[in-house]
Length: 322
Image (spheres, one colour):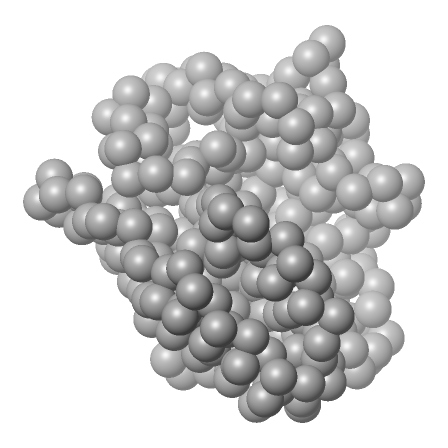
């Protein structure tokens, strides 16, 4: 699969996730073998207004390449202007978010709401492709709801718009993140004759066996891991090992997970400072130690403390107890 100067066979992407795929988490996933990273999504409106919080989200490091910066919006001129700004930061590609299902995004006509206006979606993609000199990719869903699944039509039109790859989350916007992802619609896209763009599949990949099945059964060029990586960044290493050798690596021990969680905490504190870095670990702790018996009292202690040393002591207690 070749996007611009990036050429990787069967790449495994880390999905862009708001308030999750920040710099510390991307570094952890990269260390575990994520082939391609994507930033949290960036508001095109906030970007052209130079909102500092938005500018901070776009910071990328040399070790992160290949990496894409993802933007969203609903206005042609704003998206084009935002893409030009992003290009100056020299990511490997610009990704256009036409799939976010969150209410505050779709009510502005952005994200997955663009699926209801396919002419506008394709037009924006076409205009952005023409405005920049780096690859442009798109991430979207199969449709707004079960009555309006239009991903095949959109894929064919984006194919002509000049984008280089299309990531499809195999759910409708109506599903949000519930129910099962229906990859049969991704198969319909990969079966389109003379399709020039690469197709990346996303949705419900949580094991190496599932990852291999997606490649073999649905004909995708790459896969993207989202929620399956939260609290389990080693999923990238395990998937790549299985794809290359057929070997299933064992689940990390609790002690190994503690070591990873402490490293993640250190990266958070280094990036955000002790208090904010500790608070932002809360969304990850429960997932790191999901399934531990009688874990609730200890989990509550972790979630109540933003003190670095106290967090480390609790994590070490977990390693010694489970």
